[in-house]
Length: 336
Image (tube, rainbow, N blue to C red; front, side, top):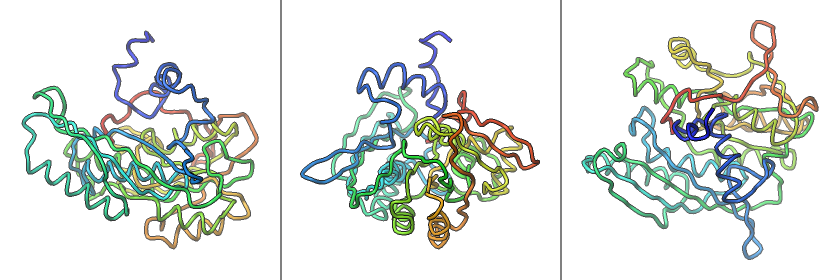
């Protein structure tokens, strides 16, 4: 593939975006190794451990069942902090607004953003607003950055998956991607809402239940659960084995994926997490998640092994086996 073509695709959370990051963005800006790349940067200031993250949101449409681009921007950013075990505290918000975008629509998005921030217990403390000419954007884009504090001494890191760890998924997969796609294409999703939601409450429950047995957290957003699992296997230098029959999927998501020819494993989520937990604490961790309203459908879906580093194998529902690869192209653009 010519190098200039990689910039023509939307960020997919898959192999193309990883190539762009690995070959251009990361080497130019930071030089961090794969093992050092996480959902947020860990920093130290005044004897305190902080987490810092940033993300851009270009979801189409900006209003979808279960949320808006405003609440999504808050949830996505606080969740990246939570995946490092950090309590979210502060956000920035930058708006890029296309000329002609309705004022009442913008007001509704901002109100939704504020409500989400209040629910998450974070403050929007700084930001920026730009208006671009008609046709130079698509309604509204939002970029948020977040800062959180680590109030513990646990080591929760993308390179910390360990042999024997149980892999826990906090709930049904693919809800966000299918809700947005149904809204975009006018499909009947049976009232399926996005799962966009803050994850800090689940993380607190996990930390309390598993303690030092909680090794790794990731939220499976773009590229879905499959891409996240491959990222974990590569970063931790381990092999993962998962059971397809154990993975929770709503019937509406399964049905829509069947109609559209999509694999639910690769569909985006915005309110779920994947955790690697030591085997002796896995049952306690699972029970803690299931006691939380956002984790009622949590399940242990696999185990970390010492096999080929970076490999994810799935035992299929019919008894076979297949290798799970990272998403190769863009399955659903403009999902977040």
